[in-house]
Length: 105
Length: 105
Picture 1 (cartoon, rainbow over the protein chains, first blue to last red):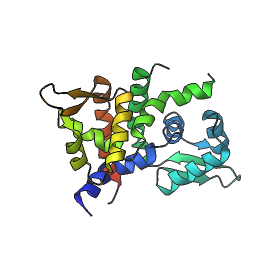
Picture 2: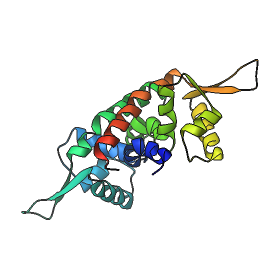
Picture 3: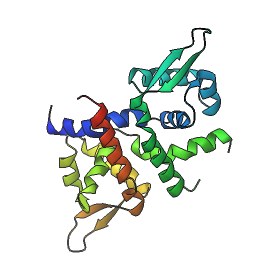
Picture 4: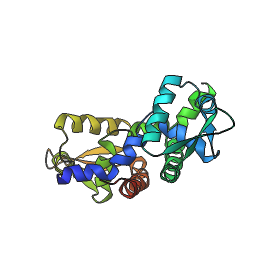
C-alpha cells in the first residue's frame, strides 16, 4: 500500500457510507427511533424508490452500520443502528447543521 | 417543495460536497496549510488525475468552499478555504476519526 492509498484510507470508510444522496438522511431518522421498519423508512424518506431503499439498507447491513432483527411472533423485521452506525450520528448532525447554516434553500 | 424535498435539503448541501471519493481528503490538507497550490495538492493527494483535481477544485470554488487568489508578482495561484469551507473541517476530522476507529485497513 502506497502512502497515497493510506491517506485515502483515512477518510475513505466514512465517505463510502456518507457519500450518497440517500444514506445520510436515512440514518438520521434512527437518531429519534430505536428501530424502524422498511415501510416506515419509505414514508420518512419520501421520494425514495423501494428498490433503491432496499439496496441502501443491504449495503448498510453489509457494512455493519445497521442490523436487521426479525420478531419471532411475526414476519415483520426491524432495522436498528449498530454501535458502529450510532457513532455516525454526531457527524450527520454536524452535516445537517452545516447545511442549514450555509444553504439558502 | 414537498416535505420530502425539504427533508433531503437538510443534509443535501453537505452530502453534495463530502460525498465524493476525493473531496474530503482534498479539504483535510487545508487544515494544516493556509493556502495550497495546484501542484502541492496534486502531490498531497497522490494518485489523483490532474483533470479530476481541476474539476474538483472548480466545483469547490463554485460552491464557495475554496477561493483562488492570484499573486500579482507571479502567475502562481493559490487555493484557500473560505469561512464556509473552514466550517467543514470539524466534520472531516470526525469522519477521519470514525474511519480509523472502525476500518481495519
